[in-house]
Length: 263
Image (cartoon, rainbow, N blue to C red; front, side, top):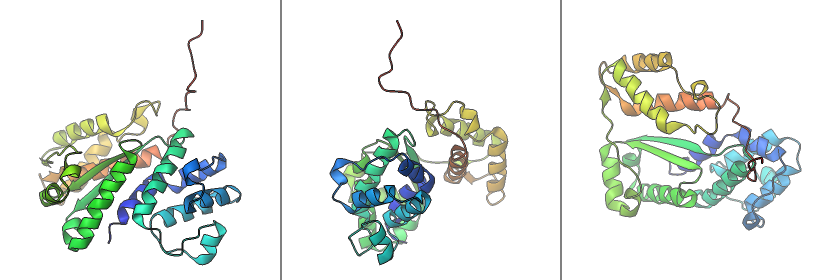
């Protein structure tokens, strides 16, 4: 596993359905990307009928997956090698801007549960991972992308020493074990307060796990660690449930920017 999975995670969070929907709107790529592989892909994909296939290819390509020459030719991509993660970052940023301006997707909340993965990397990979994470955060600059990074204390100690400027840009929270269903419910209530955009959905109850969902998740996790359910594991469960619900809920229609009061 290499650092490029950070980029694949963003692409997966956006999803091929949202990209296919954007292609159907005939939205043009931003002016600054016209002469890039991303711009050429977008112009070619807009002219094709199978938007789903084009969206699926874009996700693979942005995620650093090896593609075939015939595929790249179809979409006007001139680079022969896999797309480098650092080059994919501005492309992802442009894609999110296009989705946001079209009212299809305003933001994504990305959970990276690192556990000890970063510590298991070779030193050079660790440095590349941290630089890529910093590049990702700088590119989005808290617009459209919100990152939750879960890991052992050693991970954040490493960040503090290797990239102090990055460590100063996040809020560090120590996650304690959940020892009862009541604690799990309180944790879920706090997660709900931060996890969803109340302006995007008519009824938050349709997209957030119910009390029954939370209790079931806690009971499931508690079987492995009785009375010591880790908050990061519960966080992952809640995040997956919210993402599943959001995928099946229609967002509010975009409000015209020039609306005014009637007189």
